[in-house]
Image (cartoon, rainbow, N blue to C red):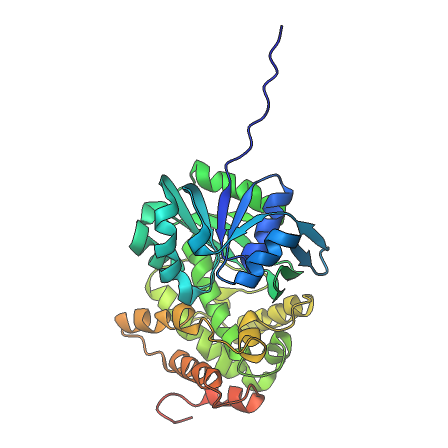
Length: 350
């Protein structure tokens, strides 16, 4: 008599931060049969998920998935895989909360903006840290509801470039979220390219206009180009090979790029953003809607210190950080006039 064995249920993975990124990706994992435990520090969000499920809305479809959710202090147990999807400036605090729940062979994936892999690796070791790069459009709307506004790059890779079974497994899950997901040996190339693009997004958030509208304005392209080249020069100094994504060609913002090359990258970025239902960045939303601190100190500001370590001046990046802080404090409005202040460097000269 033959014995029929039942397929084993996969071990649950933890998504720490059930907001725009973590919620959208976690819902797709659940749909694919992967058990997910959400951890979030917003009590109302945790309660809504537990009582009604997590709802994903937007042009790509509307669905509700059932899942367990906990506040950080409520979580019990040990887990092998934790996907970290909190805001960049909360990374250090979150990783300290995660460590007691990390299995001996456990690892953390940074599903965030910026260079948070460096922060995570400092706490748990580079061998237990996995990198990821995400550029899809999503927003937290209200407790229990995430808006998935449009597709964008989804990339995962080991920090040392060596693909391991853990990254291959996660990659197969990410394909359920986006069939164009990428498993890369050069995650740093994507992360630094996003640093350049991220600086441009922060600049667009100085105004109240959409991403596409600001990038399309001839008036601001020279200063935006100079800002992007500052970040690009830091990557270049580290011999990082930048990777393009979603119409953004980072090589168009290297020192030797031709004007036509740069112009075409702007046109491609405008076209990509006009196709998305998410017209404004999450940065703009933090400032205009949620009235809270942005990620600029943890996401963009580190490039200033790294650049200075290579004797690279970073006046525009420094000015960008300064202007975002002034908006956060309520000293400046989000307007084209504020964006125009980016044309003045930190010494006060044009």
